[in-house]
Image 1 (cartoon, helix red, strand yellow):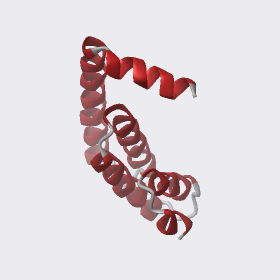
Image 2 (spheres, rainbow, N blue to C red):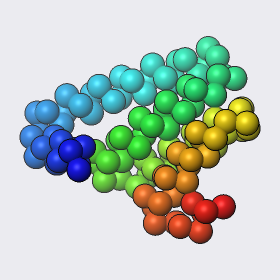
Image 3 (cartoon, rainbow, N blue to C red):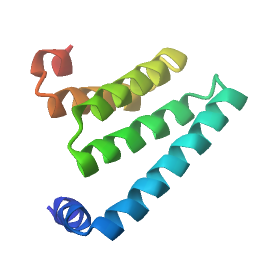
Image 4 (cartoon, helix red, strand yellow):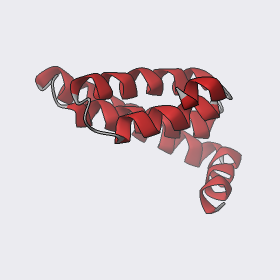
Length: 104
């Protein structure tokens, strides 16, 4: 896919990778501040989960997927009627090849 190609290009260029990693870290700090200031806003957790999925795709680090799952679960707990956090959690489980959890 186009995104996979772009991530491959980023990984292949150390300078570009460093810029993207710095941007991801800055975004993560901003989302952490937003969560602290408004801990009941489920969307901040959803956004932070998405950021960690991107970081996992960028680095290949499965720990980032696990962190994303935690944020998706927090989002779902705050807004149980919303399906988006559940869908994103299921997608994250498939990235970890945990298909039974994805179907749960």
